[in-house]
Image: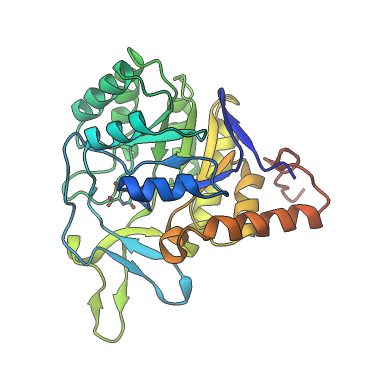
Length: 312
Ligand code: RRO
């Protein structure tokens, strides 16, 4: 069974990896993801130039019946240098995605300059979709700002760069973001980040379940799957073939992974369910995925990728 993928000259022996933010804030967590026999890569927690503690707790909550999660972590991370140190020291055959999420365009451009000047030989993910920093809107909902940062970045950046996008909910917005992304030599697009600014209530206490932003936070897990699939499918239909797609959102079973691939995902990331279930999730998902492929008589994901059928 061929459960592999490629982005430019990076080969992935497995299509699953963590979603940025989950199990990737410390070197020990990053090592855990890399050490799994069922991950194809690892992505680091989105970095800011300096260490951040993030928002006050409670800032993460799991809904009943595995419906999903809500978080308002607020970009807690060990700072750019910590992750640069990690990727410089690390000996691994697996590709590493270095994720950055500056709080301003200048922060992002400064970090990209440092990545460009460094020996880092992996992939870089520019997170334009953090929903949880009070007072900072998600950049990728501002099409002009998105085009501006990519224009300035690609004026000097030559390494494999992708963007992490928020979910879009309108066909015109799919058209607009794709038209912008197609202007740039992006290696990949990762869709979706959490659905921003949901609200979950505890029925026992009539209280919100997380403290920051009066309870508003990013939704992940089961409840976001349909939105994630729509975004993967819509972008695969609109982006240049050489821009690969990382499908993220709502993956709790092997069938969910299969559905992402059907919609056109090259790699698939696991966020909420990795937080809920732990590192063993990757073996379970890959085993379930392989069983579905075998049952359908496929020997490779290439026979499935993008093959979603519509009703004539
Ligand atoms: O740290 C967070 O609050 C966070 C980030 Br940066 C993100 O991109 N997505 C998310 O759900 N949480």
